[in-house]
Image (cartoon, rainbow, N blue to C red; front, side, top):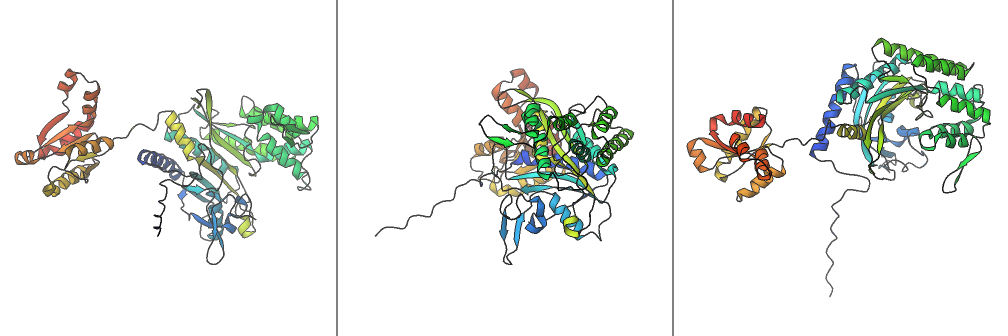
Length: 495
């Protein structure tokens, strides 16, 4: 008679596209987000925490395909057969909150939010299904002063976390200007917005690919179409050479000053009402930012900002880091964008039927942390806790008393809570914890009223390469009075 097979053990690994974050990574992220939150708080923004779960109905257009609620999000049906999903971003929950509490919240409502979001998309190298976002938005303000304030706040946030001036630039564009350019190019009819909708979509997608395809590739997509290296053909917008030239001139309109750029944009939008309004908004933002001391060394008008123009309704901006790093092949390249945002005035309309102006920005938390590591601003090994070793199980209260004294003095400390039988294992534990100091008190030291402090940092250096003179000048192990424990540990940590 065959015996039942033992149950299969589960694999000790996270689901595909997810990862675990350990001590230093979590600490660095929290420290950075705390610094950013300090800037947002100084600007008068309030924190908001929303549920990680939203109804699919509330997520609405933020889903890739609302007819297939499991596509793009992690969704399921509850016992009432209502579709629920993990939040896709932090903007959709804000829309729901702004509508739900519109009679209770101040208007404008200024909030910031930080937390994980989940996307049911194919993972890849450096691309995970769970990641952090850090957003700040103003809901209910139609003036571009709100957009200018977001740009200034973004600039301050980058500097406070350790990106110095000169290593970043906040670039600003405006969707209305592009609409004006499309009018001039003949692919937007203000009296019939649905007309040329397909062509406009192709134009938007084409200019969004300028960095990857270059001028020639974008021109091909604006015209008949483009065949890539594999032979696949992408249908173009069907613009004439003259029409395409208007769009290309828009992307190349940046000049040495904001005023000169705005003047060139005025030429391009011609008599378009929307286009001229967009140019005026850019000029107003530049004026407001200049009055606060945010010059062209930090924030510039740049028609080259095209990402998100299909989504935003007015000003659009992104923060780009300008310093160089080495890629995985050892080649120099510019770090690139770490943040983006803009004005999206249909935020709450889905819920209330009324247009509510809004503008906001989202910082890529992982991208910004990677930039700080590249600059050496984070990533240095943080010292672990002081370890109080255990020589006698019956004297555990004494050891915990030492730990308590150290903690009350602001020193990170812990007692060894493993099996104390093998003292060598305690020191190995301290090394693995990257502890700077071990506190030792056996029966002899207790009788004398002393403790032994072992400098683990210097001890490692002595074992590796320290000279005899260096060891004599600062011994790796000292015995001090028990009453002098805190002061002696502080001295050792300060060396």
